[in-house]
Length: 273
View 1 (cartoon, one colour):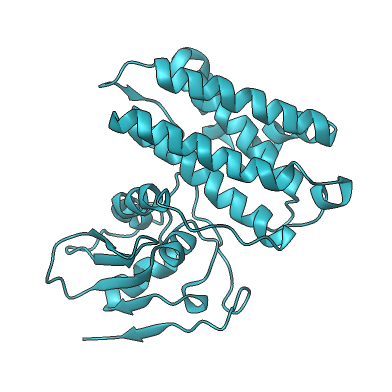
View 2 (cartoon, rainbow, N blue to C red):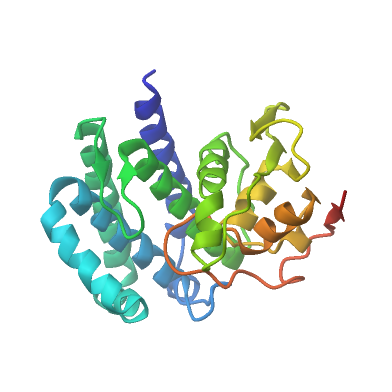
């Protein structure tokens, strides 16, 4: 199967997995606060619905997207609030239907778009594959907030490999986004995956490294878990700093989660060389 087609299919599968959770929600579940401060599950799905539409606009009407980007750049916080307001006014059924229609339209746009071109976004422009991966990452990350609120355990799938990769590629951005210099050396990443193998990134022999479950790595770099509440083994000062401030998504630095917020009988085993 074509690699891009497979990636788009994985995005669709991730969307469907989240849909299976929220499709059963009543109003109480929709309006329950998630771990993201001030956000309910309704906010989470509204966010996905808006940015799925924005991604399609980037592909099909870049001039209109440029105007959206201009508004976002003027006041990112006000923009984020304003774009959600119309969606939050919808009933739960209307919001769910809006998200479903928007994501179907986005998938069609992804499958119809020519390859080899870059598309504008709120951060750096992206290749088509990177944009698909970013939507998958966002769906999974915001889906985690919804799942945590609902008390639903999610399956660990091979789709996490896409998220781990975009998180590693965002290593320089994680530092520059905070006005910091990018370290001269990188971090070796070696993660265990559901198949029993290993997912690896970075040069062998680096002094700084991160290893452990791929789910924990993705949770930390989408800022859905503090590293102290995971089973990641973090070696070296650069790796420790990355695990504290790293983020796989564009936009201002996220606040992340506090230590102990999701302690699940897990402990960080961190050592220095």
